Image (cartoon, rainbow, N blue to C red; front, side, top):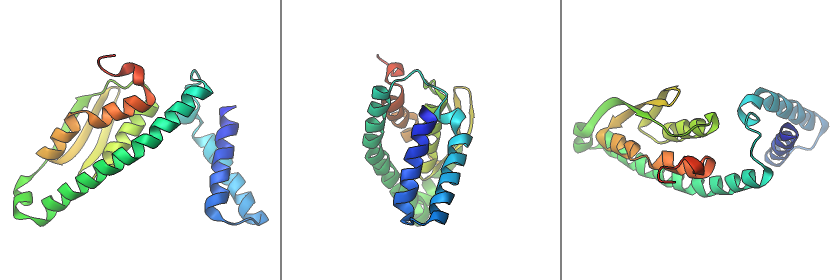
Length: 167
């Protein structure tokens, strides 16, 4: 059932975003959406233990996560701008690799965390091995911000509230 739902969500997005309603473009959309649904099945359809209500709650929580991560990206952009454009920033720049263990359990939550970190300027997720993340950061400020665990906590609130520390 999940693959069918995902296929139709993708196809609706294709139709809305392309704005083309001729046979060629609709056919291309169907083929593309079928291919993406098939290629992503191990990521999207692996955990079928959650019901529709839980998935809707996750979707709503993710929509609330997007403005928060957008603000974090803006703050990191300003910091990286300072690093690149000021003498004080140049002196503050100290590239390093940071390693930390995550309490997230599912591959999808780790995937969202890794992409959220990489989306934030000045940080790149280099490697994930099991529970261990290896992240490249450009400065101590970015490292400290990363190690507070705010992004990890927000991802856990959306996808794995049961693993949050203190619960």
